[in-house]
Figure 1 (cartoon, rainbow, N blue to C red):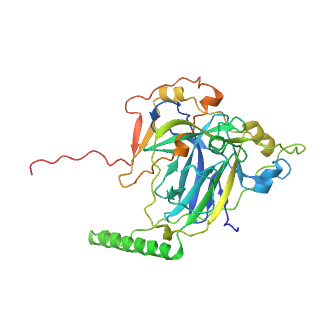
Figure 2: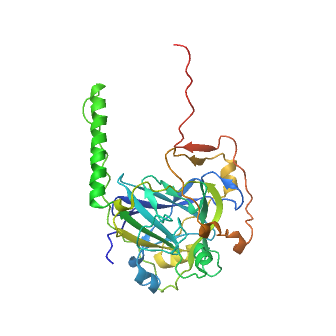
Figure 3: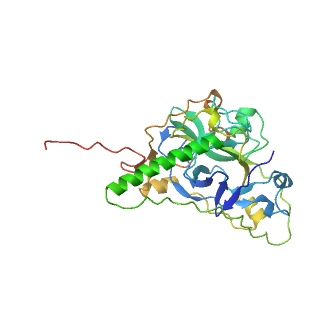
Length: 351
């Protein structure tokens, strides 16, 4: 099957249809309780697998895609951006859908929904556990049974993260664009009637840049054995995975693009790319003692997807790797910042 072009722009993946994805470093949550959204602590670097033909594992070269370095038990979240045109994005963890818990497939499904809708879904921090929560993505080695893949399928073969995007079909996209033109004309008319003059300027997205070749590994090339890292789950946080409110017929029946994201340990990253890995994750107790922010996102019109039995039963990585010995420093009053909150009502009095 032919797929569209995926590019790296800095440390951002750009897929056709204006979809962009960044992999964000973050604090790992405790595996008990439900928490606010953890902060972003920088972006994971990305490199093309094909730029390392002498040092990347052969099976990775055959799959293509990109690689990123992650520490054992490090947490991550996916940040979505790009153009405002609607898109559907499938997210797989070891070729298990992170939204539905079903096997990876090349078609969108509504029951249960196996994708997130962009731009409504601004990010995804973990697998959909329903009732307004997700379980945090946490990196673990294959072979222990701790990954989502291992717990759902009984096997651990793929690891990594898989992304696949779908655009609106031509008729639905033209209807959407016409609606946007109508709304823009109405905004412009209101601006003119208020004495502000011409039309409201529309921001144009920057075109994707070509892949940047990474620096070759120093010294004699040493082909790597296939690194084996996947995603398990950690603590629970308050985050909704939004239900699609479009009819099925609006979406293209075939994917616009897909990409395989391979996860490597820091030593493997250095051996494959010749680059220094990023520093180890920030200590969350120190982060909280400093009073730095956590977040709570609110979308009044969004409808949360119900949990699936498959993903509800996934156990946290601590049951395989042992207890989390890093102490939990609770957040302080005022440390959780609302995002998308409607705000407090304004009182009215006598006029």
